[in-house]
Length: 253
Image 1 (cartoon, rainbow, N blue to C red):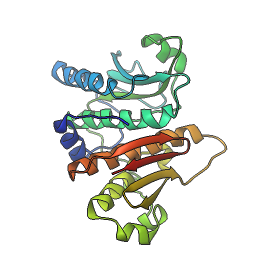
Image 2: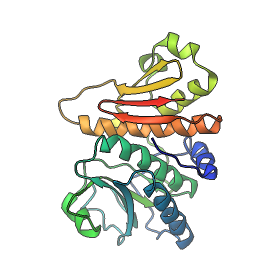
Image 3: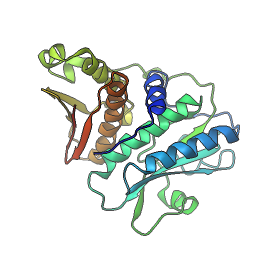
Image 4: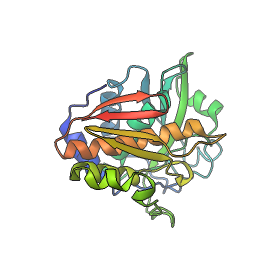
């Protein structure tokens, strides 16, 4: 259970959902001071949500990430999503907060890319000040880019594979919009691992996929989808209460 009360943020994030896409090639320009100030303010505000999760941002030299994050070129900032080593459901909660932060980047015309596995953890631990009981769970480059969405950006599973058609059809329009927004959420290798279960006054996000390897990444993906749902519910005047449980994220509204 948490509260982010700044409505101007929610309005911005709601608008950014359809604008955001992942980029791996950046143009090398440093992030402007005014944009960095806004990002630090956003990270500080999100820091108050969970006391065991924080977002840190550091500068890097041009192409300084080339050896640290696979396939990333030209980014001049990198954000790390850091949490306690033993936090309960830490990955799903990091996915939630991290996606809100990356939506804020989109509001500032900054491009980003979730990287949950293919990064040099030793290098990143050196450039960020990591406590003994902390772990970097994911990173994202931040920068400017004219790159267009990838050919697979709009490849999404039909809603009938993500939610029982009868449940979806009986849902109020705000919940239908929230699920469509979650359907647009980024996920590792575009697996779209979520499944939505609707009951009276409740949305449950569960794993549609169960992988022998990568289940931890799927937890983060489901948290990202939850962030999209919350932004749409807020825009429609609905305040949800979230519970991050093992294998399930529940929103009661």
